[in-house]
Length: 377
Image (cartoon, rainbow, N blue to C red; front, side):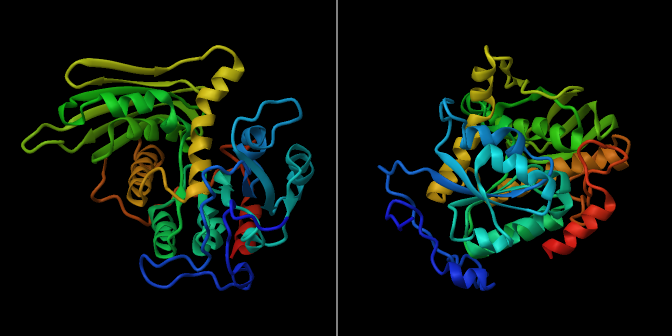
């Protein structure tokens, strides 16, 4: 396809493919620069995917980017290329999307406008899968929970900052209309307490929805956090949070998040600030209406970042919400629900990846992960 001034134009793609990817100096312009599309452009945003075996992209999001004939389009994105280590996903994914498989991670640079790293069931390796794109300056979405440790999370953000790379990591719950309403209507300085709920089949990949939904609604500033549950790979669980005071000489703010034992798109929060306010996302009519309210808002935010380079939240917020979640996971996995002081939560703690003996239908074996890490390095 000939170049169009309406498309992002990733320059020096050949140099990038040769490994000349990193920009120099904090805040430097990315070595691979790109141009936002013209406002009147009607071209679809081209997306490349780092595809895992168990992913949202393969099972859900493809229908929003590459709809089948006769299905209304719900986003302005189209998946055109993908890289995967897993040969058993190729036939199904190509049948669904028509996307082209590339041989090397770097091969998607210059061919697409944005990257989705969707390897959340190899959580401990996402930083390696994302690295070439973060270094290149390409807008990159790293699927939840972003990273298994703060050390790896900071590594990704540091690379992105230096290269000027727009990045995003999110829960669909953060972009619900209820979260938007809460951000507008809740006076955070007068907030006293809150209680939230979240449908969560497992804590590591779905309990995060409740944590990041609450973060989107009322903000961070967490002092201590704990999560009590039977096990991380099955609900229910309860998270309890103490926030720093929001005003001088003020009182701490306390919150709870109840994680149900099922998956699904239901969540909500009740805030006391000091009046009681409810923001609940319940079932919304037909499956189409529910899907439009649950998945589409985050995908549109992703599309906008791929199109304009504007991040929906700053780097520091991505790090803060990741830290809050990992501290709560540490409490659940290692401390039997004991409170974790955020000031002493160490960056080297690593939750690892999903383990087959705990999550048999959605995990890689130790041997597969070891081989996968070798390939990514």
